[in-house]
Amino acid sequence: MSTIHLAVMLEETMLALDVQPGGSYVDATLGGATHTEALLKRSEPDGHVYSFDVNPKALLAAAQRLTASGDRWAGIEANFRFLDRELEAAGVMPGSIDGILCDLGFSSDEMADPSTGLSFQLEGPLDMRLGPKSNDDGLTASDIVNTWKPNEIETMIRNFGEEKFASRIVDEIVKARKIARITRTTELASLIKQAVPQSYEQGRIHPATRTFQALRIAVNDELEALKDFMNASHRMLKPGGRLAIISFHSLEDRIVKHAFLTDEWEALTKRPAEASPFEVQANPRARSAKLRVAIKK
Ligand SMILES: C[S@@+](CC[C@H](N)C(=O)[O-])C[C@H]1O[C@@H](n2cnc3c(N)ncnc32)[C@H](O)[C@@H]1O
Image (cartoon, rainbow, N blue to C red; front, side, top):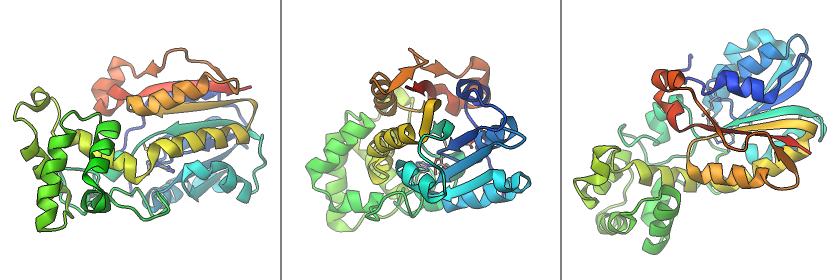
């Protein structure tokens, strides 16, 4: 199984983490394993890398790709919000990690996999969990659109999608769900398209983009997971250890920025670093990437 995901800001993150031979590192978001592979290479000959993902498919593919690393690499199927608990269970002491990387969101492999329900362009179940351990209540996007109160759905779409037509979209959802449960990605995408003006965002993005983002954030409890992850990372890092986070939308970047302003961290990036125009041309996904780095005090 090979990955179609192109890692974002690879060189920048390795420099930011100041990866050293023999160090201990955590990749909180394994995905296609390119960042993990770079951490393993730069920490040769005896460094250790622990990689988390909630998606078992990512761990399976990485295990095949990284066999040569032997016991220098460990894959952990768990939510990164429990990073401290999971690392301790693997025998890692709090305060012993040199650097932690988190490249938020989903991978291109997950977006291209219709069974995740992440893409409004691919026919699939309206699920959006990135894996069985994405959340602990089994909540899916379909549960939200079919069972939440209209005002709860509207708040979620407005807050997590920054969607100004949230109210119209909810009206359309409520009309449709009275007839039958909404269960497919393309069904929801066409409902949304009907609800918004034809001139939506001057055609810059598909009308379902913001609503699908909002549902993904809600299903995977992404913003709370990020806060838990930052606390857990602080516990596991050595004083002087580094945390690098790549985010892809302003809701995430705001959380990282504010946490790095507290007494626990010394921010190394006053403004977030961005991908070079050269990288953005090769990988359009890099356009919205923002990298922030801080040292544990
Ligand atoms: C943007 S991709 C990472 C790509 C990776 N850096 C690479 O080099 O290919 C994000 C990955 O993090 C995983 N993920 C998202 N939220 C997670 C969470 N709360 N806990 C663990 N893994 C998560 C996704 O399943 C996905 O595989």
